[in-house]
Length: 242
Image 1 (cartoon, rainbow, N blue to C red):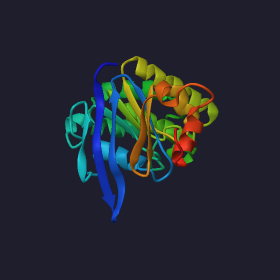
Image 2: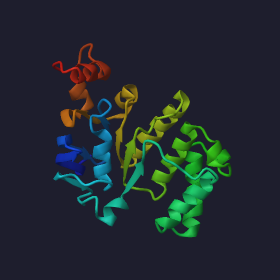
Image 3: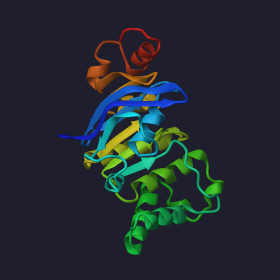
Image 4: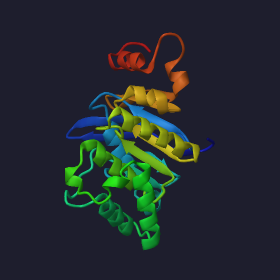
């Protein structure tokens, strides 16, 4: 896991006279599964939007694979899964993947093969020709994951990837992310599912009111004894000592 793939330093962002990010800093190593957790309104989604170039911070630096988010070459190295994607309801999963693949410049043969592989991988092959307007939130989330993986990115940035998934689907996703990490992919995700974070992550950062209050390898952060991630998280959010 040598080398830092994601480097965030002193990130600051203000929205309507309110400071949303107040000097956020953390780093993620190659091949690491990294959890970014915090209460609602802490700044998780704002940080992620800055990481993928959807908004521009007032100050601070973001480097992913050594590049700025505005660099198209950086964007080709990442796959992004939003918390809730919106698709035209009459499209099918195959049509969605082929549209995104063609936009990113994939050739027809590669796109056809890759689309089939990914729909199998996320458990949606039998629904490949069904309209997404008939899907549950969890099914749509699986399509979003396939879309994020379509161009075989080196790094995945996932915003609440287990949102809408049932326990079986969460288990499948967990195994998939572990497999991708074993293959050298770097995985960064935000989540409210602390049990999933504890099961998946090598390292975490906890953000509160726009500031990272604790960061590091999960075993070191959580520590020993009767403390678990949920207890630690609640104490930090309430302003108690870790």
